[in-house]
Structures are given as structure tokens and as C-alpha cells.
Length: 112
Image 1: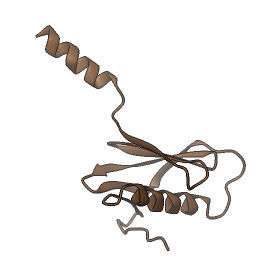
Image 2 (image 1 turned 180 degrees about the horizontal axis):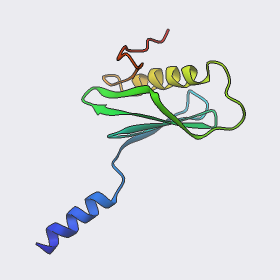
Image 3 (image 1 turned 135 degrees about the vertical axis):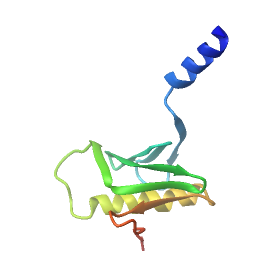
Image 4 (image 1 turned 180 degrees about the vertical axis):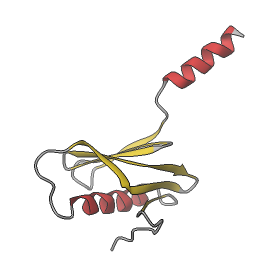
């Protein structure tokens, strides 16, 4: 019984980190995905998107985004640029998986 309790304690004391990778093609793009959120570091800025890990990738809500680290004033299109780079590079690295961003009306945000 103690062995099982120790295993459960060890399991829940660790972060539920599923995947981390760095893409050298994009300057400073780093994606960390857990079951419930995705952290994106892009050009020195770090944002966290709430969502869910799915069978074929990650479903993120754009409205559930919060800045972990942001330097300077917010530029026009900065969040959109971060989401676009994340979606494209995640799919490039994981051919069968996608990051999908949804708006408040549950519509998929499309990127060019």
C-alpha cells in the first residue's frame, strides 16, 4: 500500500508536461504543451493559452491568453503573429498534429 501511495504522490508532484520543442527556423519560438495549457515563447515574449490537449493536437482559446512575460508596449497584430507562427511551426514539426485557436464563438481562427 505504501508503494502505491508513493507512486501516486510522485505522479502528482510532477508537472503534466507532455511535449517541449524548439524550432530553429523561427527566432526564439518555443512551445510547451501540457494537458490544460500551452506556453509560447516568441521573440522574447511569453504567452500562455488555455485549452485542451486533443488526440490530434491542441485546441486553444484565444480569449484565454495571458502574458507571462511581455516587454514593451503591445504592438498591433502581435498576438495574431504569435498564434500564426505557433500553429504553422507546430504542424511543421508534428505532421499529423495541429494547434487550433478558437474565438469566443467557437469558430476556428484561420491563418493565411
